[in-house]
Image (cartoon, rainbow, N blue to C red):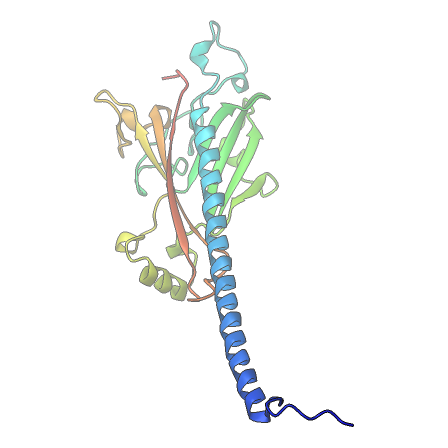
Length: 268
């Protein structure tokens, strides 16, 4: 004897299965869309955070080097050593005419110095193994750092210029983008960050404050107050671009950070 079939027991129809599958696909599509958006956001934020951290560490290192510059000063010796490589002649080395004649330090492109300048700075300091020249120089969009032992008859610019002693310190530096990049990139940067390059001019990495008879003042274009030995502070401004465009907008992002180094030595 066969059991009687339950009158209400039945399976799903093809139409019901198709509707359920369609709803499932819509939900999966929305979930994967949100996942992709989240991944793009994470990638963009990671790149921006990475650029920020690299720039912050670069500024910290420059500040440390400048703050220790000029040590040991010649004024710390009761008898001046015959070998000038044993002391810092000046906190900031200069060119042209090092060490015979000081050049004049200006701001925003002024003055007669090749270095110190808007994108070039050399400091003298004892880093623990004797007095060294430490140079920061922007070439293209890469900020280089060179450390060379000071020599008595040497020239800091010549000593720190060879590619063999320069180390890439920070890449994608856009402070002088006007002279190094395509018009398309510059147009994009100006459209996204209209106030970052006022007047469409390069933004100095280094600006200098000098000691003067009237107190600290921006280093003048002329006069004895504007020589490198009188520099007491350096303001550092770094504008750095992310390595890849934003995943969502396809726009390259910039970070801008500032710092200040204050010379601590008693040389002047």
